[in-house]
Amino acid sequence: MVILAVALGASTIVFAIALLYEVVDHASISEVPPNSSQVLIAIYSGIIGIIGSYVGYRTGHHDDSETS
Image (cartoon, rainbow, N blue to C red; front, side):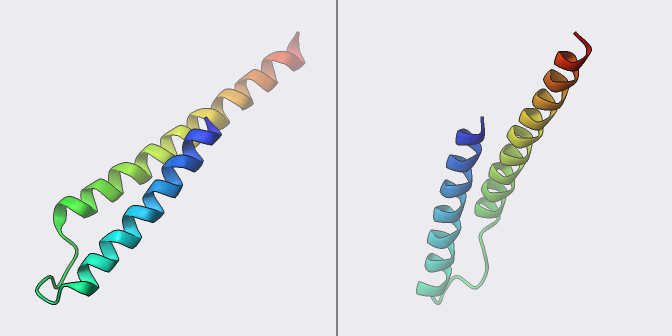
């Protein structure tokens, strides 16, 4: 899961750089398009969900092994 979170993080960085390049390169675009910001929010939410589920699983699994 950590590998997936790292891959999503890397893809988010690449997407954000491409988005910023597109905004800077084209003078007619004065702001970040709404669809692009929604994609970034979805990706960041996915990363937080994956990391949260991994941490929760590890914490629960660690507690179970101590009580056995």
